[in-house]
Length: 218
Image (cartoon, rainbow, N blue to C red):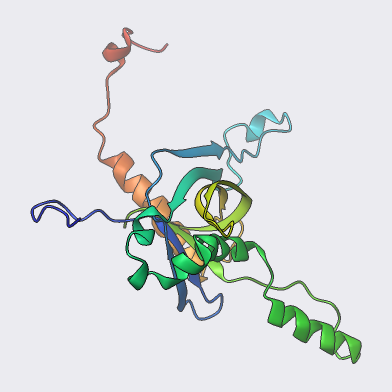
């Protein structure tokens, strides 16, 4: 069914994978449906948490921010038009789930290469690196993140037991300039994210003590 011609274009949230060194876009993962809710929490990084009163108002860095969301993936619409959705007919939404799941896996080719070099005594076993992941929620909220939790509830299946509907719960930790080098692509994107918060905060008109029912503080 086509949308009403005058209806606004609905943008989607999603993830973008960047090359860690060049910053080139490797992949864009669009959420099929935008979640109804986005849960965020911020944990203060204070310097005075050890009881030193001289450090009570000092900050060690940006707060640790976490984001949690639940995304729905559904093959119903695609299965109505099998001729143009062959992959969905063949595997349901398994390929969509795999796109998200593989963000948590080290690349199998890289693992094989490391193993071969280690077997030859040419390389110690190294941790595999991943692309830089960005969480994009509109043009004003683009932040580097690390996926900290991931769970899937598969709710419906086709006759071949391929999943055709699922809910994905995704936990993200925002990577700040405490986690990334200041001049890196990720560090620059985080600074822009923080500066946008500061800009929005500055647009709010300050209140008065009388609004709080008091005439003074001392």
